Image (tube, rainbow, N blue to C red):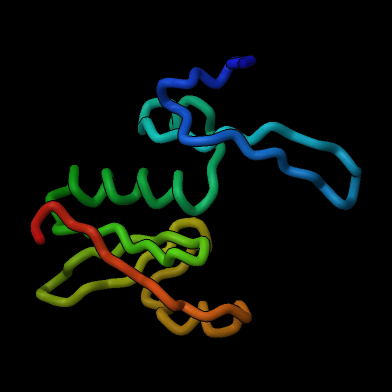
Length: 116
């Protein structure tokens, strides 16, 4: 298959994005490597949350990655013993009810952390 410039070793998948305004199609690689995410300068919730997770860890915070199996991810950072919600894709901090207006059900949400 055609690899393109994405590099298969660091690409989870490649999506085709269609802009309904200009009718243009764009290849959108979903990278799994922090280096490739930073190099591309592009991302969505998965890429942004990976970067913010790594940033929280680098700054010494206990950080967990939260996955809504419907189609969204965000992070939580423990500050003074409490988990703080951060959604870097939506530029949201401590707005845990923001998803209620999205018109979908959170049926299976799991948080992952190195610290348990």
